[in-house]
Length: 128
Length: 128
DNA sequence: CATGAAATCAGTAATGATTCCTATTTTGAA
DNA sequence: TTCAAAATAGGAATCATTACTGATTTCATG
Image (cartoon, rainbow over the protein chains, first blue to last red):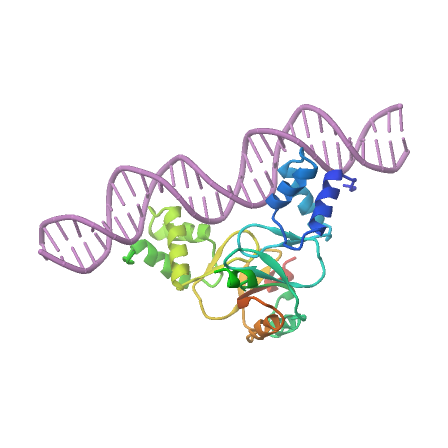
């Protein structure tokens, strides 16, 4: 149960911190393998899940059926390009007030929300 | 290319309209089979996708890795119970203004957003 | 009503992301 | 140094979904 250090987990975590494009497990695997060729895909998945459960990274489910991961755990929102599928950060003010709106007429307990925006990213707009 | 009538699609569509709990393809399959025992799972998937592409139903991706379907295509929001996994409608006023907030400082084109709320539903709160 | 091309189907195989399994290796407290 | 617990590599298994194929159904047209 106690967490033990693992070089693989360290490398995965380090790699994720260098990226702002919220890579998938597969992308993490391919990149980490450059530095650590023997790592297995299962190890990548297991450690990404572990890091996410510990709250050190964020798992993003943006509707493309593939989990993306983000080392930035601060409150922020994401944009998904419908054309290239890229996931980027959105610099915008908080919209947490929608929680109040949702709670106003609901019997259950609303703890949070998941929101992502979609459309065409700047790059795809320029290169149609 | 031209759409032709199919009894299977009709039954699937009819069934979905009777439900407010946003069933998965598997649930649709099991129920429709009562009335039409020979229908195949592939047909259910194909027609749900077709209906969704035509805009007659909505495909909900609420982050549990399984697609849910909703015959109500009007603008409304959904709540997902973290305990029982149930997906229910949320009666609340529009939060479309978050699109403006998001557009304020973004170079790409924001066309829409996906938002769902999560927490503990009324029923699970009562029966812990 | 008869016909035939296009759409749809049932059944099943294939896919792709993710999880599980097991024998082996690594970690770290005693 | 020791050794139980944790973690790993590699591969098999799972599960939702899609693709394939030969047979069936739909429906515009004669």
